[in-house]
Length: 282
Image (tube, rainbow, N blue to C red; front, side, top):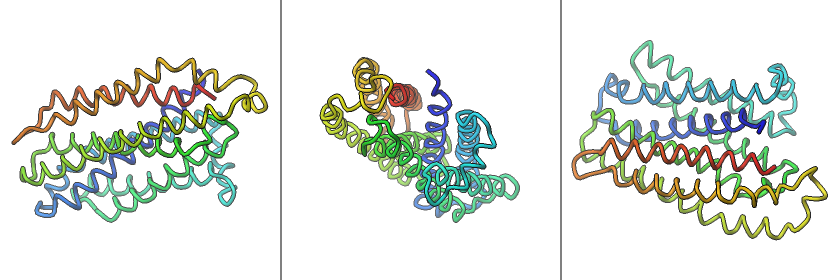
């Protein structure tokens, strides 16, 4: 397996964007009554986590390119290359988030506009990242399931991060915390259901390909997909279990941090397994 840099890169960038998204939502929709310093205390740990994850993701991406200066060469094809666009928007996302994080560290103020810009560029980056694989000559990637899986990972890990932020930093009124937590859990459940509903459609697409892979690949991606069935089943089972456990973390007036931790661990393991499955069937 030579695609670990891609697994690490895609997961870290997507989780970073998801964390930034839900942190921004909490700041905009729930923290209007907090002082600037309280907003700083609430958001900074998540911002630092998102920035570190994004930076490590970009480092992992250069490992996949083989030679870091290849990234500069890739930038010269922005008008025609999804890879060039992905590099540009990933850099723009990390720049906006990095600037917001630096300002927060130095002034103890969170600039919401920079966070919104970061979310917007990050969302475009994930779209471009997905398009790279959809437009690659790998039949197991050339389906809208790739968009759903990549975007779903960002929303899933972002929602879990949002719950952690709310549980770890009890600065908001409980009514606001409960509303934001229910929103995060709702997104978590909805995106998981969507991802599951897409799988039969994706399976039908793969079944319709027949022997087409023999014309394109030096090996059998569809056969490899079948051989990963057990791994895929375990991953989906872990994801469903993690979402269920996470959804039960919210009580009447408090969080169960143990359930939240257990759910987060199950979800993270599932996402790694699903991404391993994605890159193992090429």
